[in-house]
Image (cartoon, rainbow, N blue to C red; front, side, top):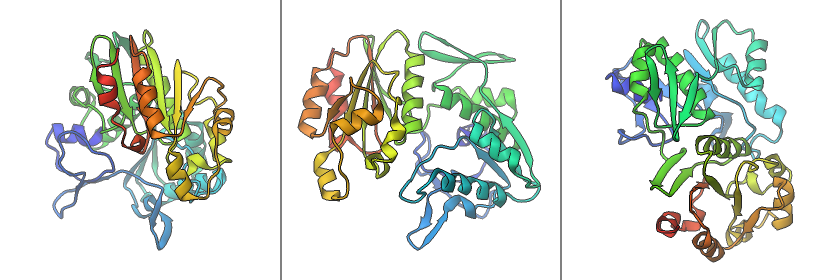
Length: 332
């Protein structure tokens, strides 16, 4: 969002981002000329020989923490250990710098309040908004602004981006004029097909909190439609019998719930043992449809009645290369 707004006003910055954004050929741009570099923070390991998180090396002048949800249990084996990485990150901000933080996230708020780092702290929440006919409008002093993105996560991030842009000289009225054309990052709540009857959305959900937030956002945005949620268990964490319990009730908002994992891939990994009962118990839902074979997934998708529905496909993988769009595009 920040990069989109700055580009809208031709503000030149260097950048390093992880997701593809429309209008940019590459998501890495580093020069000797620009005053700012915009970096998407990443708590994952710096390299195979350096176990410290990447974001401990940035020494930000301006930083933003949008939320904290335990992930990467292969690297951070406990919740306490994971939280400590964000405590250290705050300490890496340059003295006199700025931390913009999500004050609606209790974990973030507690960390910020506990920190004695000599920085300026700016909290944010969600803007006032309303949803009309499947479109989210943000209320501003200049009137209601329609957005091409939706969901609490995007709205919260919008507030963060507005604060950062203001610190860089782009103020509220200019920000809203630019953000109205932002379509979101590739595979992040991305609408890939829509007609008068059905909507197909793709999302890069890969953790319990992101899964729940995505389904809730779609349910709120399209409250008059059936929500069919298809989620692929794909990451290392997803198959850990301790961690998978973190998914409890994460799909409760969906009207129909499918969980897919590729048993052939799992066998090759050789270290995991999972089955339908473990998955249903962990997700806390007996009405889950659990599928472990590619052929069964294809057959199941073809049989789904998509009348007046949203098909929400969520994965950090690719559903074993199943072409979901082709299977569902002409499906009523």
